Picture 1 (tube, protein in one colour):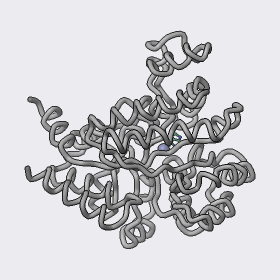
Picture 2: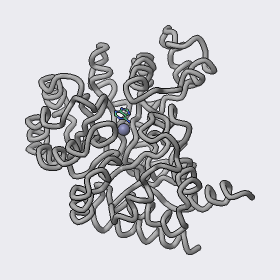
Picture 3: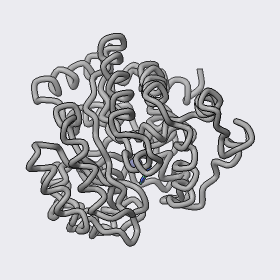
Length: 339
Ligand code: ADE
Ligand code: ZN
């Protein structure tokens, strides 16, 4: 067994939660092709190999163009079920025990797909995962930050009748030039509805977007947040307040947030005492699922087994599970690491 295989076996053994995962970003070209065929549509690419070969991105927005184009094949409740279920079965292989996935309603509502269709397909798959795979979940609905906040407010109201099945709201899509403040009313309304709040910040946007996500949106968790290290005072605050950061190493390399994995700030973030977690973001596009993200980061940055255990424990600590359940999962991580 080489180092990579040994590390992968160790990481796979650890129970883990995944907290930064876009369901639309798990659409593998093979599944997209099958869904396109049954819906009488064509893929934005002539075949699966051409699609994969085209997955070389300059930056976040060049990726998002492909991501939104591929989501165009998703039409029916069954499509959203299959998308979610195929991710969950793959996550089970990685020993993911809990997931808090994102979905982007506006990417589908804008194509005329009713909210009830997509959310029902997703929720049925999440229920089946709990029953058949033992994977628990909390679903998070993201607003597209490059679209008008009024549209997000309409989506929030549309989602209201599903509010006991949608745990929280998030903010994603093109970041630079779209500061969090625009969504203060939407997030305040979501909070009034009792929803949890997270936001992408500090991926391609500046550290100020991280601070504003906390102060203006009331975000309880920051998605990415890797650029926090540019601001030492902010880094200290995030560490002191134990603000969870959902880091996505392979995504950051593929979208040129960092040029190589060896330059990735994950290890420095751990050393700064931050509550960091490792996640796969859009695994169908970035070359790996959850275990791959742990392993590639560990190999390039020289993470120890102790670091990997901390990251797995953090994934539960940073989740929206209740404290007793978090404690049980953290114990299970320790037992798996020792055993
Ligand atoms: N939507 C899907 N993946 C994303 C990412 N990494 N950043 C912002 N929006 C996204
Ligand atoms: Zn993301």
